[in-house]
Structures are given as C-alpha cells and as structure tokens.
Picture 1 (tube, rainbow, N blue to C red):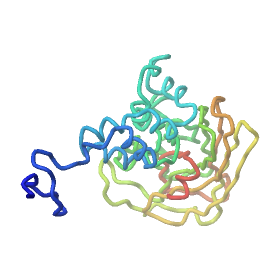
Picture 2 (spheres, helix red, strand yellow):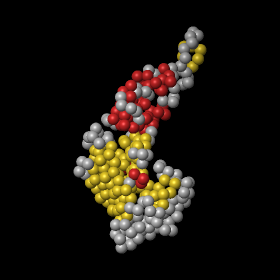
Picture 3 (cartoon, rainbow, N blue to C red):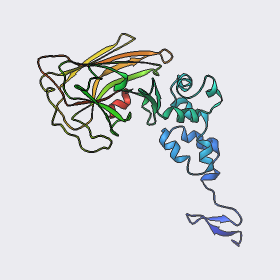
Length: 284
C-alpha cells in the first residue's frame, strides 16, 4: 500500500512514480500571455527570460498592441523601416525598434518611445536652433562633453542680446506633452563628466529669461525664470500642449530670450530642448 508513490513535491505532498512535478514551463502559452498583457513592458521583458514558454508567450501581438502609439505604423516607417516593411513584423519587434533612439534632421534631433510607458520623447540639439552669435568665438564656444546625448554643448562667454529659436514638425501621438529647455550655469568640463566652473557666470539674476512656444493647433505658452542655480543641469519647464490628431504632423516653434541690453550676461551652457509626454514630465 502506498507503493505507487516514490517521490514528493517541494511542499511535501507525494507525486506518482514516473511523473515529473508540474512547473512554470507547463503553463499554456496563451495563459501566460494573458497574464503578461497586464504588466508593464520592462516587467514583460524580464519575465521573458524565465524559460522558453515565457519567451514565446511574451511575443504575442495582443500584448504589445495597446502599448504602442496608435500611429505606430507611421512612426515605424518614418524612423525604422522603408514603407510597408513593418507590416510583416510582430508588434513586439516594432515596440523594441521604436524604443531605440533614432537621429534625424542631420543628427540634430533624436526621438524614441519611453520604455516606462511615457510615450514619445524628442530632443532637439542646440545645433538645430538659431542662436544669436553662435558662430562668433567672442561669444560662444562649442564644447565636446559626455554630459550631453549629442556629445557637444554651446557655452556662452558673454553677450548683450540673447535669442534662441527652433522648431520641430512631427507626427506626435495624441496626448498631452511638456516642453523644456536643458541649461546649466557654468562651463562644463570637456570630454568627461567632471566638475564645472561658474567663475564667469553673471547677469542672470537681474532680469528673468523668457521661454515661449507656439503650436500649429493655436496653443502657446510663456514662462519666465531667473537662472540662479550654478553647476547643475536643469530642465526649465516652458509649458504643456495637447495633440489631438496622431496622423497629422504637429509643428512647434520655441524660443528662449533675454534681450534687455542694459547689462551683459554670460557663463551659460545650452544643451537641448526636450519634449515628452506630460506623464513622463511629472516624474522628472
């Protein structure tokens, strides 16, 4: 009696001789996929490493379809592939491709899909903007540094009239977005990520800097900030805007000005403009 049981499960309960214990690899792939569909992309990718069943289940299109922007085919063709090539690809591969940063406009702009579910993000390098006196070495230096994703920043020695302007036109997925200028008071170290110096910082505590943008749908925003924190990269929030049509290009014009000529200002480092989903901006 009892001879039919020769082994025990991990919890101490017996299992019939010749039968292996039930494991994660025995769960049907469709059941695993239904569970994975409720998780965030980073968690899905981590679980895909558990075993073959999890890996195969994580590739189901219905998992990734709701996590992709509704205009993901337009974005994929624009940023990743030639026209029509994404139609034969799985949604997981399209998602992974869009999460990889892609440069365009001669390498002056970069766009990617935030893995944390924050939507489309875009960076515009200072090289993609119109800046007062940018090519005059009396006013500006172009400094190579690892402190920028574009590996170079613009450092202002001194100037009376500062005006920075730029624009983007892109098929942003529908949603609410925030726009920021990334700046630092002080000269960054060249090449590495070492300390910066603020010895030449002057003129920014007298009058505020004005930031503005306007959107092709009629929205606009203005904000003013005194620049008074030295030695640290900061994102100055200009405002928020709403995109309603994912399939229509949205054009945004933005600017940063300090045109009070009663005093000089200098010691400012300009890196980029950052546009991101408002949900991601709240976490910054």
